[in-house]
Length: 107
Ligand code: SF4
Image 1: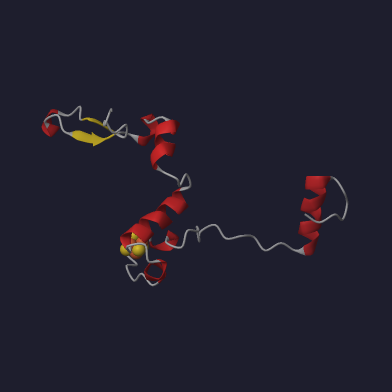
Image 2: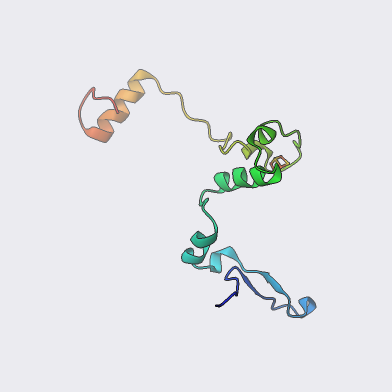
């Protein structure tokens, strides 16, 4: 059985003395990435990281006080910088028409 980890490679740097280092993710095949990682969305990956950080306890992730951590805004699995737009009824109707071509039909 081949136990080689497809996410690692032998370092090209002489300073690393032939040690294994992480490959550049963009150079790993999608097949190998999907075998190891279920989250393809970076925000979901951050959520998974936070759960790992808190030993899987979601309530501890919720209560995290490490506001200096770069993951902190994303720890609930959403991107707070991308707020869902609040649409007026007129805008909802306009978008429904664009989607369905039927005036007045709601999505
Ligand atoms: S935000 Fe909190 S829970 Fe998430 S990785 Fe950072 S310290 Fe851990």
